[in-house]
Length: 109
Image: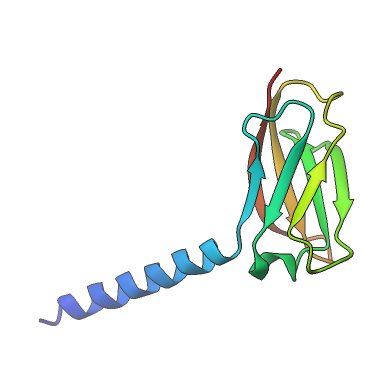
């Protein structure tokens, strides 16, 4: 009986972590993108985000958008036509510049 209780507590903590992560989501579509990509922020995440950036895998910024309206949930990046095909990261930063969420984005033509 004693061994079952710690396992149950661990499972509950694990579930809370998963739920917390699901509430703060950043979704990028379409996958793969060609010249336009849309980023959707969950309600829990959008109140914290100050800026959304698209960066390549060595950290070079390709594009960025500032978040002025905390009620906005979708951000469209229209000028990806000059970016090379490949894998990029979409990064959400808070007002101090700290990364609070990220997602992979693929550009393919």
